[in-house]
Image (tube, rainbow, N blue to C red; front, side, top):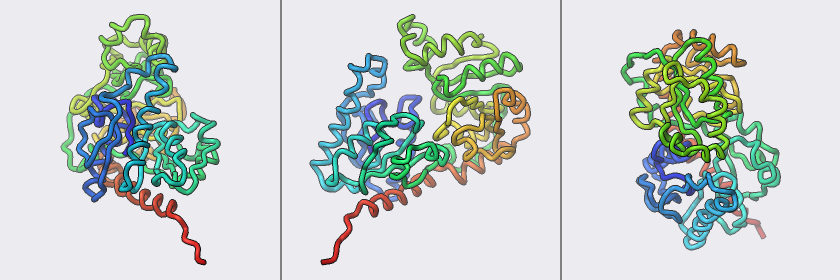
Amino acid sequence: MNAGPWLSVPPPGYGGIENVVATLVPELRRLGVRVVLASVAASTLEVDERMSVFDDGQFHALQRPYNQVCGIAQAHLGGVVRALRAREDIDLVHDHVEAVGLATLAAMGPDGPPVLHTLHWDLGKHPDLYGHLDGGDRVRVNGVSVAQLARAPEALRAHSVGHVHLATPLAVDAHRRAPVERGDHVVILGRINPGKGQDVGARLAQRAGFRLVLAGPVGPYHRPEDLAAAGDQARQNPDVRFWYERVAPHVDGDRVRWVGTVAGRDRDDLVAGARATLFPLRWEEPGGTAVVESLALGTPVVATARGCLPELISHGRTGLLAGDEEELADLLVAASLIEPDECRREAASRFTPEVMARRYVELYDQVRQLSAPVLKLA
C-alpha cells in the first residue's frame, strides 16, 4: 500500500488520500489481506510491515521552488522499487501517489508486480502521462467515481478496472447514531482553494444572511495564527493568494468565520451540528470524502451538481443539488426539510469501510488475473 511521502498515515488533521488509506487498511486486514505500508516513518497505522525513506511527512516542502521539491516523490518511489525488487512475496501494489507512482511502477516493466493505481484527482491533469500510458497487462487504474473516469483520456480509460466510491468510518452504524441538536450554521469542509468555491459560499452568506464556518487549511497553514505569522511571503502560494484576494474580504468573524483545520471529534461535532454542508464547487469533484462524512453525521448536503456529487447525493432525499450559484442560496433554506436519519441510513448502506474494502479486494483479484501470464500450448 503506497501512501507516499507527504503526510503520515493517519494524517495529523487534513489529508484526503492518507485518510482514505487509514480507512481502507484496517478493513483489508480484517478481510485477511496482509499489508505492507509504504509511507513516512512517523505513520502510526497498524500494518503487517512498513517501509519508508523519510522520517516525517514532506508536505511542508511543497512550498519550495520546483527544482528543490521535485525529487521527493521520486526518492520515495525509488525506495519502493528497491523494496519490491528485493522480495518475491508482494502479490500486488496498491498505489496512491499522483503521477510519479503510476509512471515509476509502470516503468518497472513486465517483471514488476501487478499494480492498481487509484486516481484521486482531476484527470484533466498530466495529459502527457495519461494520454500515452502503457502499463501493459500489469498496471491498472481505478477511479473514485463514474464521473471522474468519464473525463479520462482514452489511454487511461483503457487501463481502468472501474471505480470505488470513497468511505468513512463514521458510516459504520450511522443509522443507529442518536440525533444531535442542530445549530444555525452552515459549514464548508475542505482545503480552501478556487475549485472548492469558499469565496462563493462566503459571498452568499453575507448576502443571504446565514452563518458560515469555513474549516480547512489555506495552503500549508492549518490555523489562522500560522497564516498570519507567515507574513507576505506566504502569498507565493496560489491558495494563499486566493484566500486573501477572494475569501478573506468576506470573513468578518461573525457571519463568516474561518476556524482552520479541524479533525476528529471537533470536526464531527462541527458537521453534525450544522444545518447543512455546502459544496459550491467550481470543478468536477472526483471523490467527495467530505460529502460522505456529512451524510454519515446526518447533515444534508447542498452542492453544485458537478463531478461525483450526483452519484453520492439523492436530490431531495439526502441533499439538494443546484445548477448555479444563485440556486444554492435558495436550496440552503430548503435543506431543513431533509431528514437527517435518511442521510445516516444512506451512509450506513453505501459508504462504510467494509463496503469499500470488499470492492477493492474484488479489484485486486481482477488485476492479478489480468496480469497473469498466458500459458501457450505447444
